[in-house]
Amino acid sequence: MSQKERILEILKDCQPHSTFEIVETLFPGGMAGIFRLGARVWDIQKEGYVINGWHDPNDRRKYWYQIIATPEDIRTYLTCES
Image (cartoon, helix red, strand yellow):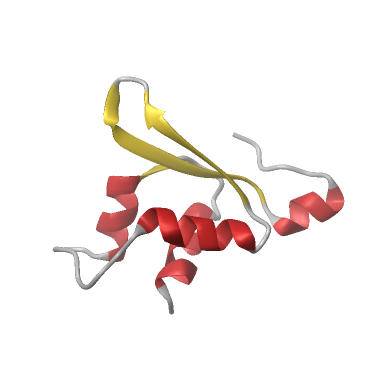
């Protein structure tokens, strides 16, 4: 499974996920190889997913991602509930 597919599996629950959480889930015990989360999220967005990203209001070093609509949602005018 590619990095993009693994990230999509994490985000598909439509809940907010921090960069730290995503990286720890993908690479438990340490980072392996070259990894650019923002680039993989952009790849997922190109497939029709709508993903919000934002800095944590209490700690600007933290960044969060959340799917707010899937390609299926867009086709049926539904969105994920927060």
